[in-house]
Length: 107
View 1 (spheres, rainbow, N blue to C red):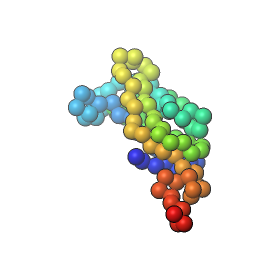
View 2 (view 1 turned 135 degrees about the horizontal axis):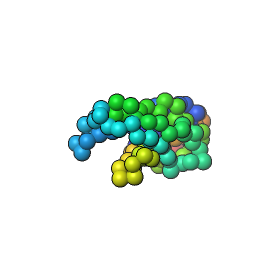
View 3 (view 1 turned 90 degrees about the vertical axis):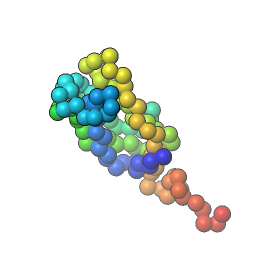
View 4 (view 1 turned 30 degrees about the horizontal axis):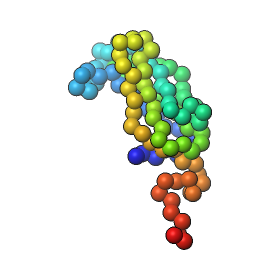
């Protein structure tokens, strides 16, 4: 499972692809939105249009620790295109005790 730092912006790229996951640069400029399973601790950017088959959300920020979070990209313009759910990840704050790999040296 991946780990993301709280309060550190990450970039999320969404690609319009064919059935074999190849980029389709001719994909229409549909409006894409992001959602998350951690809405109370996230600051997601506004929806964006695909351009040349892709778009990058450059300022996705999670504000606090949360386990097992997913991001979902959804085509708002075309309901026939199913949303895509990314892999699970966890968010940690700067407090080392919240990091999943932290182990108390006394153990």
